[in-house]
Amino acid sequence: MLTHQLDPETGIIEINIDGAADIESYRALVRDLDAEIAAHGKVLILEVIRDIGWISPGIWWEDMGWSFHHLKDIARVAVVTDKGWIGPITKMMGAVMAAEIRVFDFAELDKAREWLAG
Image (cartoon, rainbow, N blue to C red):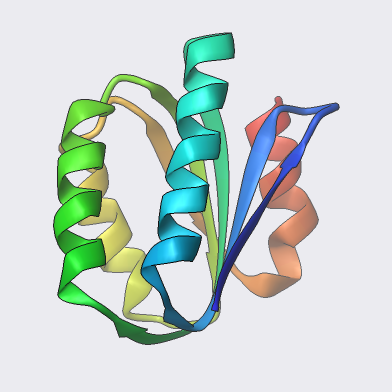
């Protein structure tokens, strides 16, 4: 399941991934990200990954296009997970992004939010 919410106080968009993602949830996320970018120029993203399930190729394809188009529109990304393999992949992807990216353990969720807001 892919869900997201905006914290209006901090401007952080929190994305939660726990299982499979569907195209409707992904497109709702993109609409809200686009709205935040239009309103504020850059966005802060907190991605909490509990479990990654099936993600359709359509989502991967759309996300690659959206991400490439918005490389400079993301200020910071905090990835929170206990999946050890996600950290190295996140850092590798961070090499092509202008955003600051950090990986945190679940026990550091509040620290991740502080880092984003700070």
